[in-house]
Length: 102
Image (spheres, helix red, strand yellow):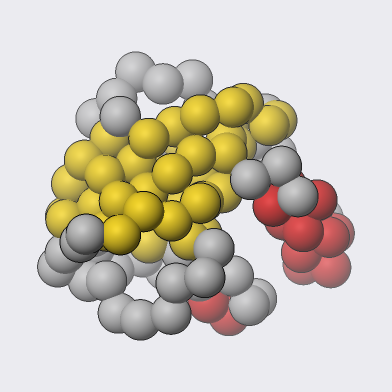
């Protein structure tokens, strides 16, 4: 579990149609892409979670501004290793595949 205050990221997820929340990652969880659940306020959201130096998550069904709110990420099933993509189109296609497992 990772819990922290949501902070502003680079905005890249929003740019490609998959806005994420970003929190500091102080965990020892192996870097990669996971299915999980994020608690934001009093609601839980299914989420695609990327664990790296930071933790970021796309919350299925969430529309809003989470900056400054406390988020708790419950990291679940490992989906795949972190990978860099040659094109934005390849990245978006992979995100769609990843979210099928959430």
